[in-house]
Amino acid sequence: MLSPRGGIGICGVGAVTGYGWGQQALWEGLRTAKPAAVLTPGYGCGTGDTGDTGDTGDTGDTGDDRGISRAEDGWVARVPEGGDPTDGRGRFARAMRAAAREAIEDAHRRGWKEGRTVGLLHAVVLGEVELWRDFYLREHGDLRARDYLALMPSTPMSTLMQEYGFHGPAMNVSAMCASGNAALLTAKLWLDAGVVDDVVLVATDLSLTPENVRHFVRLGVTVVDTDPLDGCRPFQEGSRGFVMGEAAVGFVLSRRSGTPYTTLLGGAMSHDAHHATSIDPELTQVRRSFREALDNAGVRADAVGYLNAHGPGTRQCDTAEAAIADELFPDGVGLYSVKPLVGHCQGAAAAVEVAVTALGYERGQVPAPPQVARAHPRLLHGLVDVDDRLTVKSSLGMGGHNSVVVLAPPA
Image (cartoon, rainbow, N blue to C red; front, side, top):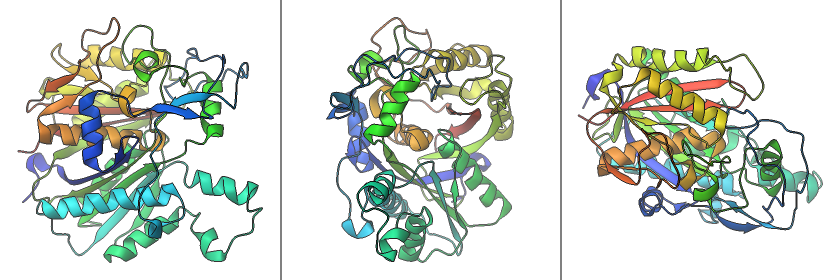
């Protein structure tokens, strides 16, 4: 079946998140409105500065190391141990393969039959962080050649292609926290150009070592010292930033998509070329991404019902997205961000949030986090019944990466 409206069907979804292994664990966690983050030893921040620093939602350097403690507990949404040991030594490769495998099997159950050429896109920023740390600090650079090759970002891609006998192009896509959106748009380009018949897309980020989290705390954007719903309040008063999370998310994209969860109609990307961390206060390129995404999808703003925002809970980013929402969309467009629940999953953030839209259309609900403070009037609260209007998904990555995709419910 051809995808409706000339778009690309997302016909398979797989997920590994702080809620556990599998898309059902993700959805059940979202429905309960209980954050995936738990108090975890070694991730505390003492009394260090976690205030807003004028960041994009991903950084903002204060150079302030005060009060950083390596011994305290902190709130993070790490992927729990699990997966198939034969998929690799580290959690990264196991989660990546599991999410892709679940998406492929899910798509087959929903009627997808792959074409002759299936491509693979992997949205990734940091790969096998834990194994690289061990390579330098514990193994002193001495590994078997086979284990050393497993550290390379190409290796889990190669083994996945071998497992399924796929022979299309395979490559990594990296655009910081916009990587998932960037990979979706790259997949659409491949399909529109006839380079492939189908695309398997995976976005993976399992980079929450204590060292990495500590530096985001030092940058002033990550909250580890309080319950996520208290510290991370996108588009609400009193928000202090985001809780960090991990995820691996898989999609199958095809024009012959059987029964799609959602349809990718189009999108756009731009770059601020302004600052290493902060958004251009003029919002010129952010605004451009939203407008061009609607134009590329061939839809009007009044066809949109939901803005699934980047929404990290930082002042600058939330203010920017709220301003764009008020400027471009009618009053009835609802705004939400699931980062208080799943955490900010960095290179996999956009993908896990697209998965929320896909599963939401299938199950008839938007699983918005509960409001805990005075909020923007557009902000959705709790489980909201979803209708047949479009969803705009924005992601703003560190360094000026702006991205917006437009998603539709299946016809």
